[in-house]
Length: 82
Image (cartoon, rainbow, N blue to C red; front, side, top):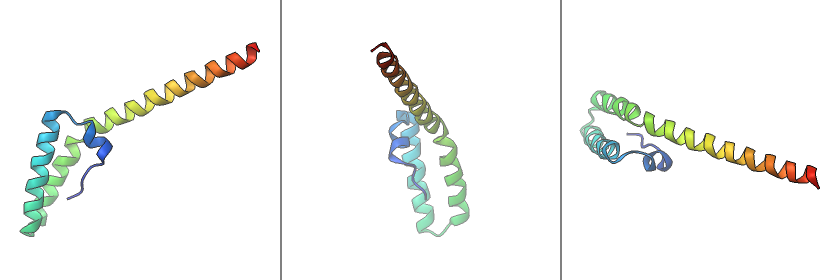
C-alpha cells in the first residue's frame, strides 16, 4: 500500500482520515494475505479519497504564491517611490 504524503494527510477531514486509516488497514491485511488483486482495488479507493485534500493543498500553494506576488509588488512600489 502506498501512503499519501504527510501534507495531504494533514488536509484530510476527520471523516476522510478515518476512512483513509481504515482502508490502509484493510489493504495491509490483504497484502499480508498476498491478495494483491484486492489490494489494487483498495489502493484505487484511497487514491480517489485523497483527491479533495490534494486540491486543498494546491489551493494553499496558490494562495501562498499570490501573497508572495503581492508582497513583492508592494516592495517594488516602495522602491519606485524612493
